[in-house]
Figure (cartoon, rainbow, N blue to C red):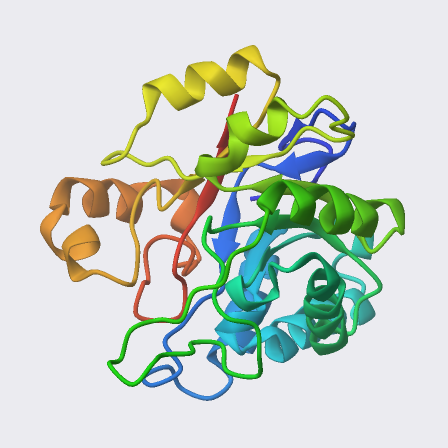
Length: 265
């Protein structure tokens, strides 16, 4: 398999290209062996993957970044071949904190920029050192933030500064943002899979020239139902040429991944 950004990609509204197949790099740190993210990303690059999904809250970006840099140093890929997709965590939604959250990711990756930066979840958690702040009753502590301000004052600014190439959101904020009279960049949207097909969202995105990224279109490592109960999908994956190298992107879910992501246009 030979995947490149040029030959297996979808063009975004800003002219950048996103590779069709992506590897989600989440792995539960309580059960994943040390170094799994590093080995998994290297294997995926060898198998042809160029699109990687990560996040600061995965706590493994230093390993993912090292794998990418090592493959670049080995001459297997160039930086421009790699599409790295990162999510803004909920404690960094306040506009003045967005850039610091992104810079923590860049520092962990040891890269100069990321290719896609998205505002993933439509709720803000209390800012602070704790990524999962809770009150005395064990409930999450939420924080009010104007997500339009987060987009305009922070995400667009990060793109303008060259720290990110593309910006996007999850499903909930699309119409809110597109109705902004001074919207500079159309977002990439996320989450579509066989059990959450969202035909109205897909049609809305088609009409507005927005690429949709499919979350777990074949399987997920976070729920055994996806890969133990849906035997027909597993049988297909095992026989498909794409998975000759047993790439953990879809098939070998015990290795590393949370999701595969495939744009729909």
